[in-house]
Image: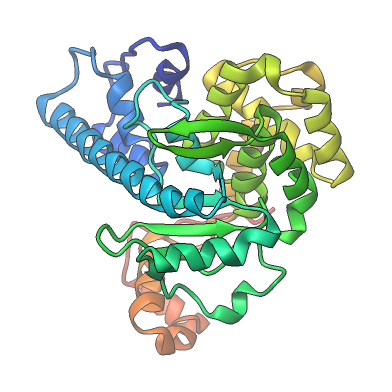
Length: 348
């Protein structure tokens, strides 16, 4: 699938091997949130079965429509902020969408709108958005969003349900040194969106933020579960802005903050999957980082998948029953009722 997604970087359409599990492909693309991008890359593949093509095109169309809606909600946020003299910096997916990082606007799947403003303007920006009609999203408790948290409580655009986050820092406090907010704001560049003004992170800060957010802040590196959507974004950023990215600065930031291994392994995996080169000092690792990811995943599978699904369902709907389910006798009884699914794993 990653080889097919390389078309987003090269601009060329791709083709899948003849022997492919369509169910597995669709499930993997959905899990990694790259179904619209995969649909675009396979647009000229005549071997696609009609139901698969129809599914991919439908998902791509729906995501394209949602991205149009996200664009309209962004304008509804920028107008009152601009009127108050605030020009926010676009972060993450909305930055990719508005800067046309992808070959088409509908290829990037994004959940919300992230806006970075100077710390001194954060509360004012939040108040202006409330006055413009956005409402508190009610996600989590307000105590979580103290003065040290990197964004204020999420807001919801009432008509669309899309959430908006006002950031006062680029990353959480633990990783703030990788993309300091003061540096990010100072080095950001202006962006005109219809009749509104916004800003974009510099290529250096944008790459460092994309990698740090998915691999460190979201914990994907520690779990050994890289996300294809985010790795594809890193490949696109490196391909498009490689000459403008200050690679020594990126390397120094991650080294000083004790995250050089995460930087190197992520870049090495991105090169392996999407054929995008990085400077030797960035991507220099020993061994095969993809093999290490695979070993990490295998070590984390300690029970049959049906039991994992059952536990997940119980956590969602009957959390009080969880302690009983974790009793070793209960696990043994469940495993005995699911012949064929129980496998033995060695913990290393």
